[in-house]
Length: 538
Ligand SMILES: Cc1cc2nc3c(=O)[nH]c(=O)nc-3n(C[C@H](O)[C@H](O)[C@H](O)COP(=O)(O)OP(=O)(O)OC[C@H]3O[C@@H](n4cnc5c(N)ncnc54)[C@H](O)[C@@H]3O)c2cc1C
Image 1 (cartoon, rainbow, N blue to C red):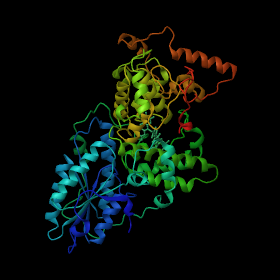
Image 2 (spheres, rainbow, N blue to C red):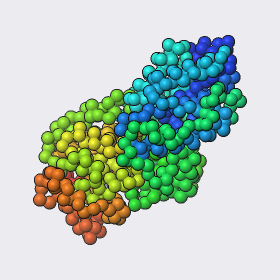
Image 3 (cartoon, rainbow, N blue to C red):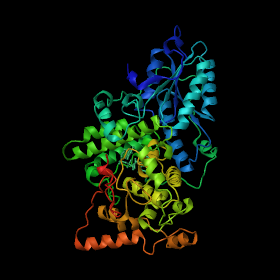
Image 4 (tube, rainbow, N blue to C red):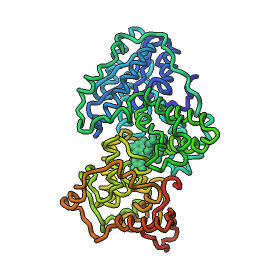
């Protein structure tokens, strides 16, 4: 068996063995959705395994919806260019590729019917699909599985995105990384295994599937999406599996060694930058973990361990949360203590209140926040450390926590190439709703949600250097006042922080100090202390 059976689960009541009893030939279909690559894809390997056993042809289909939530041209362009490359690679391996247009619940069964007719005596033995823990793709899989049940076609789901399949890692929503970590790390030996290559398929695809692959320009034209947010420069993020592999190689050669020490410094190039490729499944996180594990020797050992923590433990924690919590993008999904504290402080007076449009246009009083927003808009991705600061400030400056969460998710999903991903929902929920975190010293607006401030950033990296890299026009402040941003104190906390921090710097004592965890409720919060950042997270 090529693919570990624990990665697979049946999605309808049609028995896989019975479905193809006494018949060979025909086809097996991989309905590709989250994992848009040819190699290193357990779902496609499973489909090939089934096809080889049944002497069947192998087909891949992808269902393109002309409009997907608020996805923009930036996302569709990256995705379709990546798919065009995948389609070509599959064609070279005698595997069919069809880009279907419309709703999967209608189009996948139609495609099955078409292959049933083409297969003459050979049936469609099975449809294999990949796994996403998000609401809409879960509904797609449920819809297609029940439609195919009526056609007596079995549907098998394979988790091709996680190293330890989401249903194997845990059967419940985990409290945080500390509870999921041992469940993942103790099973890496079993699951972080080498991928077999996808083979050239011995039987050609049926009919004309994949012959001309698909017309990329026509597909891009057919979309009904917001074209105002366009593709980012290929020098930053070039779509496709090949470019993803190159980015991985580049990371291992140039940045892995410094990843451990410098990944929280937005002025340094220490991160992998792999998230857009991982999000679209153009590269497998499993492949990245294998490569980094092998390269992580000597002075790269700690960095390799830190990368595994992010790319495997934290990433799979996000899938765990979304898989088990239907409210993964709403305050309803927060833990009791967090929902309670946010409610208690929802009417606290805000020093500043910004509208979604002011946030979108980087028109706040905080130049670090504006610079981060500009990085997101212009480059399609914000530095990981700043994402936390960015989202926490949205909580601080929004009229309610509900509005803050909605705006953070909206902006992240709209501009970030890696948005619309479990990591994005969990990142926003961690920052604003305390998900996977614990209660900290109680303070205004945040309640017990972990706080971050400008002074804390100044202690960690050269904030001005970052601000200067993403300069804006000076009209920010004017627009902010014109549009009614409330400023209730004569001296903002930001100005105070800047003053305090430069004083501290002069005295040479600029050191980050962690906030104390609230244990009894008796401890008084120190209003200007910041909770420890990501590295000290649970
Ligand atoms: C408010 C907020 C929003 C976020 N939105 C997204 C998002 O939309 N998409 C997204 O992929 N990540 C998101 N993250 C998580 C994290 O910031 C990004 O994964 C990271 O910045 C991606 O850059 P990189 O690939 O260079 O990361 P690296 O540090 O090089 O990490 C390698 C990989 O590990 C995973 N990873 C890293 N950090 C985290 C984390 N904290 N949680 C889960 N997985 C992680 C990612 O897949 C990443 O590509 C968000 C975090 C916050 C606080």
